[in-house]
Image (cartoon, rainbow, N blue to C red):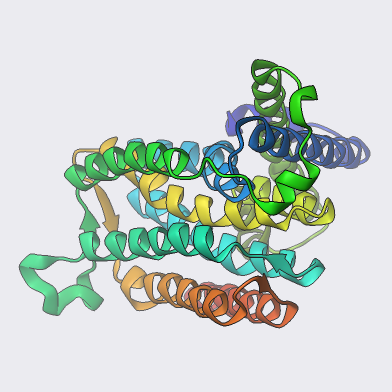
Length: 344
């Protein structure tokens, strides 16, 4: 699909590219508005916490770009890209997206639910690292790397089903906000809510798919170096749905949905994205030495910082922690950019 978008975009005059970019940004905003509104309506309709709706249904929708990119990369014989996209998205979601969200407005935390989902978040990330280890020769981990085997992909997909069922089953409880602000019996039909929710997801994903190659083409025409484009626009591309959804949630005063979306996206990047990607190729997903030298330590580190923040903040993730998470993400990007520059 990305190839079709590029074929459409490349022949356009620069003026038309700016028009397409503007249209896509508007579509992103409208889609995110619809997605957030219907996610809130769904949580009120079924008396499920917004954090859990964000961590399951919304995250499944916004993680689809990562899944499609990683699975196709694995099938086409590029397992580094498949695994790197999943790991990079976890770092981006927790550092950049959650950091920006907390900086806009401190994010509310329901300790009971955030802790329950949060331990799954860091546990799934640790499972990914452990299953990628070369157990036959651990001494060569940092020099030869490892791989996520196909059977681990099957295990992750099985755990994905268990996670979704468990999350919904254990979350049918009404928060204080929902008791006060719920719409009671005047809520619209559940099927109508779900259809609008899917429409919102579709708008966000479609707009994201067109926005990135359009921005990339504009940047290249303006003389921006390719490695800078790769380290910024392309790296951000698959996480754009989460970013737009989280910012919209925070602006609408539903930071709980934003937190749930990020936690859920992190879990799904392991179980959904890495799982299906490893399942799609008999050789599994190769984890080159750089994963153990840099990517995995950064992923676990930023998740540990988030867990410490939740433990210390109790009920609200403040701007200071948001700045720290964002700072860690920027360090990660800078190190990647330095590494790319050294190779050239």
